[in-house]
Amino acid sequence: MKFFFLGISSLAFLLFGHFSTSPANISIDYEPIGRICTEDYDECDLTIQYAFTVTAADTAGLVVAYRFIGPQGIPLPDPYGTLVGEYPNYAISGTYPLGAISFFVEASNAAAEEMSVELPLEVVDCYAPIMAWVDTIRMPTVPIDLDQNNRYDFIGLKLVPTDFSTDPPFEGCNGMPQFSITHPDSLPNNADSLIIACWDTFPQIIRVWTWDDADNPGAVQPDSTVGGANYTKRDIVIMPPTEGPDCDSLPIVTGKVRTENGKVYPNLNINAVGDISLQTMTDHQGNYLLTEFSPGVSYRFTVDTISDKPANGVTILDVTLLARHILNMNPLVSPYKVIAADVNDSGTLTTLDIVLMRLMIIGQLDEFPGGTPSWRFVPSHYSFPPERNPFDPRFREDRILNNIQGFHEVDFVAIKMGDINCSATLP
Image (tube, rainbow, N blue to C red):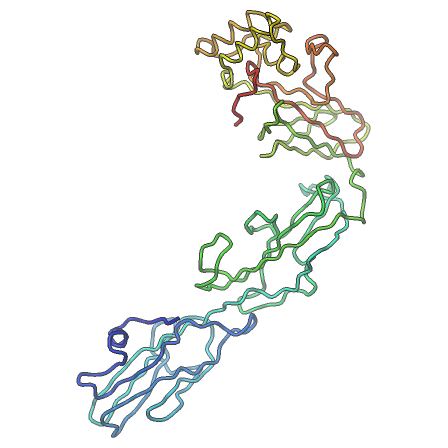
């Protein structure tokens, strides 16, 4: 590939293949080097011979010289190279650092005829950092202090990129390499470590990214743009751990919030109240994690109720389903659907619930009566009576754990009041 600085002399070269005065008493011909890569990752300059030819009808008193033009754009004596050769074949020979420069070549004779051209050159670091990576590794489990408050949260693996290299990183032309460790479907970020809980599924694949501070115009970036750092990546398989503390050696409670038909519910507040109050939120997959429980203490787990948008998911189909249930034509067999249908929180399903649902649909009711929230959350472990009547005894909206030790799961089922067929949209 050829790169040109399109000054007047360069434009003449593009049009006519050589540079000359008019008439063509002196000409300077060359093949532009343009952008060229260094030879290796730790090579910070490049030795070149920039060849050109000078032809003159009158060679009496012919003088060929050049000056170096650096980043400041000022012609100066060349600090890196020199002019070699003899008429008509010349070259600028030297070892040049990274960056864009040029050479201002001049030729003149005793007849005061002269010619000048500018030879472009850009030395670029095109090599990504070199690391010797392993393909598969088995890491021991360790206690993880996720919030860095000097109390361990859970047992897991804390992975750093250098765990997967057989050699330490070394400095290249643009300093020490930078690292990021991610899941395979993620772009590199500023996180130079990755934590995997020991109860996660194994084997797992992680991706290690390495890059430098080069400004390589031709480097393809992780987001598919072109220009910037030199990147490299490596996928590594993490095998199940066989060493380190057991996964259940610390008190841990994790869980998921989802509807009866499996829709996950993110951004919900999860509470655990005991001697202290712990709180967290569900992530985009409806999962949550709570740790740091005090030994010998009972904790009550709840999900914050939601009262906004009560009409969400309430339709004529729900009214029809409730009517068929009341008439015993098609009874609701799911206790979660029965709870959803009791919009006035009376503990029974009656025609009043139908009236209230109709008023909600046509916009004449802003909220359910009696302080009934839009959403309720029932622990999934809760066992309803054999006849599936959730009101006798009344269903629970919390779960109690005593003296939490080891690993526990506390899931909740999200119920949208008035939405019997689970058509409500989640935020």
